[in-house]
Every structure is written in structure tokens, then in C-alpha cells.
Image (cartoon, rainbow, N blue to C red; front, top):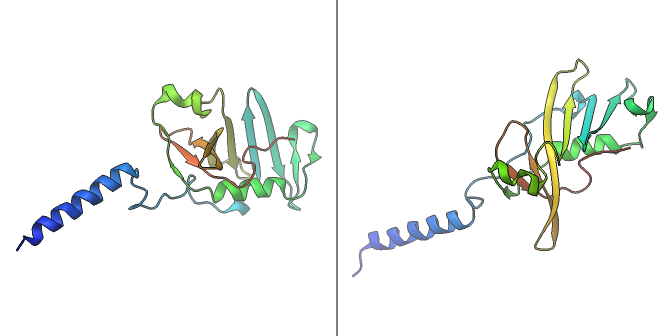
Length: 165
């Protein structure tokens, strides 16, 4: 009769190999890209891409305007939708932690879209660099990276993450 320990050993070895091949996604929850925040706190959204900056400001009535366009109103729900998509953005898998590859993914400050969320008093809520699109098994995703982190992530957003007007 074979030892049950041999079975346990091979089971653990198989699980270990699967964990490594899967990048650990099977055993650990991927989690949110951004730290938790209340979207009602966000009253300023700034997007910076290729030297072009746009600042969106939420007024007391809940309408968003574009500072650089002399307070022109933004389409109803557009910026609120971006804030909600950013809040619920989930990590789909690790991409790179090597700065030399940031430009290829579009997650460096020069090629990506830096989106910053802030409160009315100017204090930061969150910031993320939105990178290039990619296609994975017929699903379009994007690379993203937090400005103060080395690791970039693959995400699968449903809609725009870098607003422009």
C-alpha cells in the first residue's frame, strides 16, 4: 500500500506549479487598483496626457465643468461615470515592475494618461496612470499603474478611464 504522504506531496507540488503558472490569481483575490474612497468626496478630476491638462470641477449642484474651457458644462454623467469606473477598477493580472517596459505599456508619465481625483479642499483622493489598450482572448483591456508603485496591472474596464472634452 502506498503512503498517503506521497499523495499529499504530489498534491501540494501540483498546486504549487499551478499557482506559479497562474500568477497566483487562483489563490488570492486580485483586489482593487485604487484604495477605497467615497465617490461623493471627489469634486476635482484632472487628466494629463501628452502635455495636455484638463481639470473637471464639480459644482454644488453636482454638475461638472471644464476649468480650461471657461466653465463649460460636461455631458451629464460623463465624469461621474469615470469616477465610478476608477473606483471599481479591479486588477486583472500583473503586467510589469520593470520601468524600462513602462513606455511599451503606456504607464509612464510621458506616454500615459495621469488621472488624479481630489476633494474640494485640494487633498488627494487617488491617482492612476492609464496606459495602452491590449487584447487578451478577445477582450480589450488596459494597462494601469499607480504613480508611486513599480508594478503595473492589466485591467478590463467597461468604458473610458481618461476623460477629455
